[in-house]
Length: 237
Image (cartoon, rainbow, N blue to C red):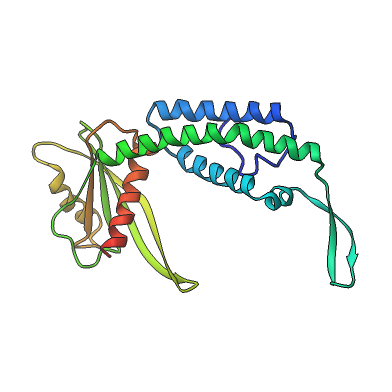
C-alpha cells in the first residue's frame, strides 16, 4: 500500500468499511517495518496523520471545511459569499466513526515507534574526530554501524535564517564516501583521508555517530543521527 495520502480521511469514498480497510492495510505495513526496527519514513508520517486526526476531531468547523462547498448566494448586507455545504449528516457521522476507530490505532502504533526511537537514540554514541574548529557550519559526520568495519561519511551544511522575526535552522546532508576500517586505519584516522579527498576544507568539523546496537542504517540510524547532529549544532553553533 505504501504511504498514506495526506488527505486520506476526506478524499475518495466516505465509507467506514472502506476507510477501515485502507487504514488496517497501511498500519499492517507500518507495524512490519517497526518489527524490523525500521523507523522512517513511517514514524514521521504517523505523527503527521495523528496530529491531523486529532485536529479534525476537536474542531467541528474544520471537519466540515475539509469538504467542498457550493456557492449559494451573496449576502449584500455584509458583502460576503454564502456557501452551502455538500456534506450531509450521514457523511459527517461516517467521518466521526472513522476518526473514533483510527485514533487509538494510530496512538498505539506511535507508541511503538516512540519506543524504537528512544532505544535507538540511547544506543548511538556521539563524538567528534580531532579538535573541533570554530567554524562548524560545514563539515562531515560518520556513521559507524554496530560491529561493522564499514564507515559511511556524509557532508553537512548548517544554516540559519530569520523568518518572521524567528531564527529558523536548516541542515542539508549528502553522502560523501564509505571507508573500510583496519588496524592501520582506525576511525580516528579517517579525517586525514577526508581532507585529502576534499582539500577545500583543510580543517573540517567531523562528528562520529557509533551504534551500540544493530540499527537499520537508512531507516533508523541515519535519520536519528541527523537529528542529533542538528540539536548539537543548534546548541553549539
